[in-house]
Amino acid sequence: MPHAIIRRKNGRRHEVDFGSAAVRVEIYSSEETVEIFIEADFEALPEERRRFALLNIPRHLFSEATAATAQGAAKFRRASSACSESSAFPTEFCSLRPRQGR
Image 1 (cartoon, rainbow, N blue to C red):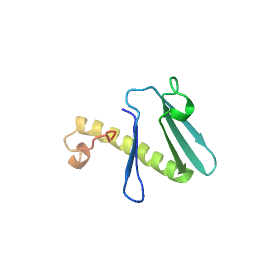
Image 2 (image 1 turned 120 degrees about the vertical axis):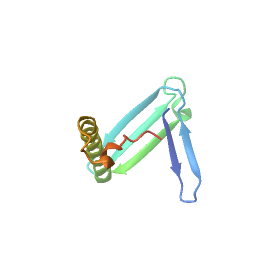
Image 3 (image 1 turned 45 degrees about the vertical axis):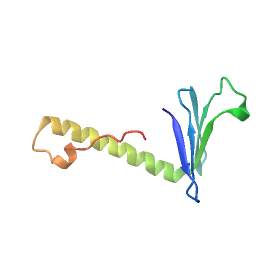
């Protein structure tokens, strides 16, 4: 279920729960930033009443995070195939699991 959660400096949480509504995701990038825009209710409600979440991230941090995720996924695939092929593979890698959505 698509949702966004933020925690403000004062500790208060704010959530945007998109429920089962159709969502639209748009990604914009410039040399300095990557912006991710998620919007629900775009077919049924006027723009000022739609639920949305907007993230603006420095491009270098976005690139580092996606690279780390890709490396982790590749490591998991290698470990999974090695665990199924040989019991001699280190057991700490055999227990790796892909990260589940929150």
